[in-house]
Amino acid sequence: MFSTLRRAMFLRRFPAVMSPTKRAFSSKVSDEINLRVLDELNQEMQSIFGAEPPATMDYPELNSSIGSMESSKPESSRQYEQPPKVVTEDISKLTHVGVSGEAQMVDVSSKDNTKRTALACCKVILGKRVFDLVLANQMGKGDVLGVAKIAGINGAKQTSSLIPLCHNIALTHVRVDLRLNPEDFSVDIEGEASCTGKTGVEMEAMTAVSVAGLTVYDMCKAASKDISITDVRLERKTGGKSGYWSRGE
Image: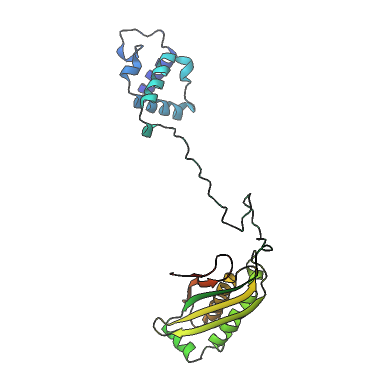
């Protein structure tokens, strides 16, 4: 390796005094030495001397040849490629995002007051042993389904305190139902919220079932830590500018 380096360094420093009979060091060296070999030599010298010798000052003819060989390389093998273009996403539909990307609360003052409803659901998977305890009402904390029902209703009323950019809505009705499902040893939870106002109650319905599901977990966690809350989702909504929407339709 050091013999090769000495030859390369000699070529860089004394190109003008080389004998034309020495083929490897002729003025046509770019035709004889593969570009890959030159790159490897430069890398080796850089690792030893700490910096690559300036090619443009020492042998302009060789540097010009190397430049022409670089330009002839296919586009896919170029060392430096153009950076990918950054595609700006259209955020015009994100009503909680301002023009400069900051969070904002939506101004609903111009909207009409309409009757609005939303239906949401979730599932709490208990496992057979915990399911049997809940079914027999033998959990240490008491009536699991009854406490979770009240917690879900209260959660719907506290939605604007839990979700920062939600409006404080005057709810006219909240319903939370919990049903034991023996097929998969779970609790199926359904929540519905309604109001007459300028914005929807989807978040209130989903908060209701989420808080009810968390309460089921809290009531049963002493018997098992393997309980899971799944499938929190909106099933249906009515009212407002977008009107009626139902999952699967």
